Length: 433
Image (cartoon, rainbow, N blue to C red; front, side, top):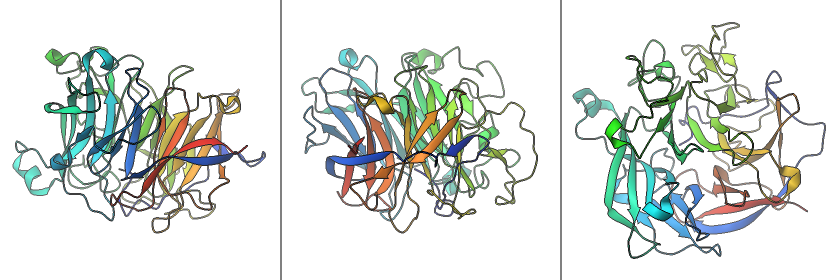
């Protein structure tokens, strides 16, 4: 999911060269209204595009749940793939059911997609069988012909299967873009510093164009005859590059989203190493820098807390927001692991166009989730400010954000550090007054 236990303690003040914490004006005041309760580690919630007003919510432990048009959680799951997952540790785990996306023509074809961590596939090379952790799957399913609240579990079709060195840095947010293609975020393969078993020893997986790890992938699920490869992907035809790659240089993109308005930009929160966190706008062929850079700073994977004064930044896309990570920079901390969110396009006009995102917590051992609002200025630069939650002293751990068909934004939370118990809540983010 977010980061390793060793790299999880990350926090925040924004780097002035890119974005800044706005302390000159009053903080945004919000209220968190309970929307759905009694769920287990909710990692995504998306509208079902069939005109029904329903939403699908995924639980890390393997269930897809249906929320009806009145906001009621149906007791029976839409789909249950618990038996397909690797074993999950209840205290903390980054594996599991990680993403869901419905085909743009779902109303007509009934097709949807899930991303999950399965045991290492049987055809993996011997060295992977000995040391690697699991295989991340993207699979297609279809809704039951007889019941719109039930998927047909027999229709699974594997679209993507990527072997994973470590249990962490999986990414695997999935969503259809404005172009109708399916986008998949992938982390660098885990552990720390893009280093170790399963990592490119010379440049790291994030910079290795031959590896699908540390990337944004883009596929055409309607073209299996071309191995799902869109011909306009930026590295198609290069012998040294995986053809699905849309962008590279990511460490652990934990939750991305397309803006419903504006220029339909792709925003990603990318969990960094020990010193900084970042949010980026990802474009075709962009190199976000990892592991040459940690956020907007030069990075040395052998001395991760000592950032070189200079490095080769040629061809790199800088993040729009950077903030300090408490592992190495405890002063003025704002969190320990970025959680990407959504550009607000709802009814509250003062929030129009603001990017609402957050951080998992300010502490691993004590829940202290953070919610931020970021604003793009007339000069194109972004600033951010922490939201004040008027009806809570402490926000639970922030797992993810969601957006409904009306453009309103929700935060998906947990009161535990791992996927255990039906204890968790999805809140709607609303103005305090």
